[in-house]
Length: 271
Image (tube, rainbow, N blue to C red; front, side):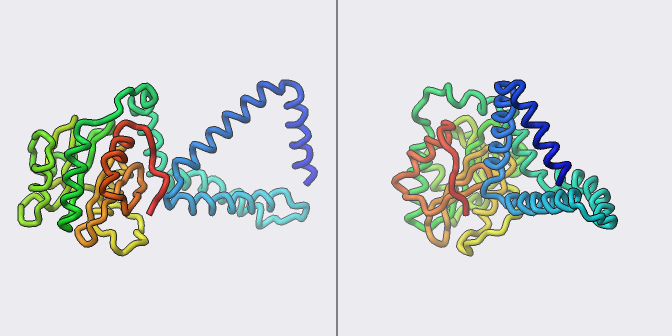
């Protein structure tokens, strides 16, 4: 414990020398920690991070104990290098998402956008409302800054104007294109019947099927905004940034999509 007290006294003395510099330093560290927690909020990485913190605290307590625990200290020396290698592997999806966000041009310019509506929101919202009433499933992906060409190539290329009639026809259960996703790029339907990556996360609600898993999967590897219409219940959900909000009122889908597509909000609820 004497070593810990010495370190605390040392940092207090350093802080008194240049308080403003150290305040800025603390704010930067706090902002970084907040960003990390916001990034992993609602994902399985929260439980992993909690376990890592508990392990680090236990190892730290063992390392400063006054009792000579030779075997325990050997365990600490052997474990820490492996832990440093394991953390990037365990948090690979979250680290990848963070780096992608830093590289997105729209990530830095979202507060300068002046548009208040998107031309494709109304036809998409109308189509979702019709499909919801008919209990016909749908999966519509809005490409953002992250390119989705590899998934567009898996489907049928259309390059068509986005209309509610086209979307309702595509997702009619008696057509050949109703399985898979529609991807919208630059306000046009780029392709239909596209194959998306499936999320490996466990879904707590049994009513969520492959469409919801695919929506989560593509949202985990891109910044796309995804609309899902459940074939079983007719409920409409929206996925973004590895999260999904369900049971949206059909009448509100247009305003919610506008907010997401214009980078004015982020999902706060998860499944």
